[in-house]
Length: 80
Image (cartoon, rainbow, N blue to C red; front, top):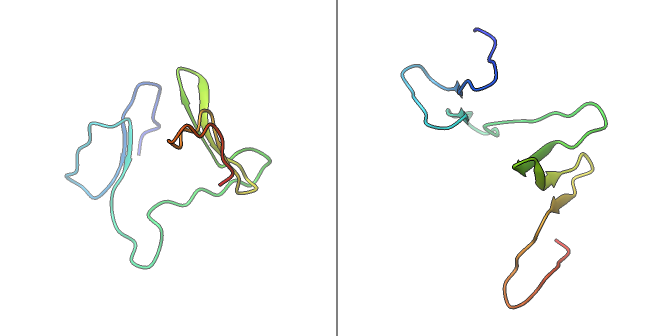
């Protein structure tokens, strides 16, 4: 497998599968999660951003951090 570079689409799937996404994982692991992210340092497990502004974090401690949580009914914050 060749190393991906900036701008490449990355697809991890059975052969013959195509994607319109930048990154997509397809397949099945019976009795297991499709994807496992193992963070072994001191950083967040997963971060999502829009235009470089962080919108969502899953911290290594299991906390979910959301940039602007909208719950409805005029709620402006919540503990999940």
